Image: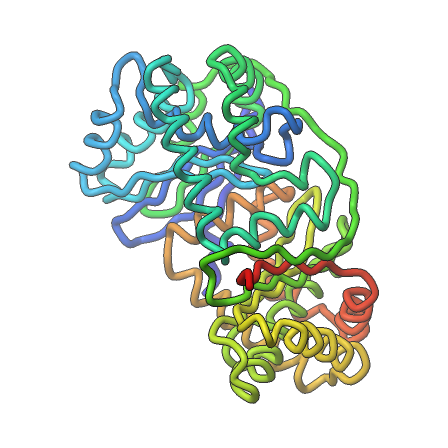
Length: 404
């Protein structure tokens, strides 16, 4: 499947980027994304990007929150959004005949939010509940807080913020941040589906001004650490092992992705086989490669019993050592085949493809997404083994365990 031939990208005069992939199925996935997220926040405003995302669904001068949802959903669409470390996005998926509705509603949201005081205070309470939910869900909690052991502030702080930082965010602070960041130069309009590129570009050119905007940049300082937290009411220990990945090197980033799949990317992975299948120490064994433009790390999550925590840690380290010394070309080739196959399967769904193109654009250029197979095939044995060796030397552990 060569989707690259159906791809188009254009940077408008005002700096806005338009990304498009043509498809024949009468569905469109549409997003307007902002090149801003948690990594662009100071410590005392942590959570403001996510708070703004919530508020943009609460109404504009011409649409209240219900009308925003109605226009999308009553035309057969789904509406949602997300905030990550380097991106905030507002998206919908709907029948392609209603592309105009999707563009108009999303455009109105990102240009004209009301930031109504009453709605702001109500949504603050909603986010407080989200913070509690994330804390009360152990698997999410350890994923949220592993960055505390990998980075110094502000990147060490959770993307969602805290009660303290959320209470400090006023309407004035939110409006100031919005006005600085939500400008064309920082925006990406991405459409995947049955549409015409020229019409999408025409909409973008007529709908957005020429303000340049400004995104804050904070330094990323690496560190490593280990911490075990105890909590009442748990039956299981939740462990994250994480290690840094070199930045600014496509070769090393691709090697990190390969290593992540090799170690914990599915039921055939080394750690799943060793920890779950061979020893029955866990139900969940999962890996992830968190490759961003400004920082990158791999992680492995395991849920196990408290008494087996040290054993699981030992097995993880032993498996990384085995890879660093004994990975061979046959196994590397098998992992590449697995990853390339998964890549082609993922192309089927327009919404996931839209998100993938957005992340590739944040990293530099969305077109780079289509070179995935080439980049993975270029990974060599030496790079994967070297990264595994580095992970052994410098890594972080976080565990949340039952209190005795």
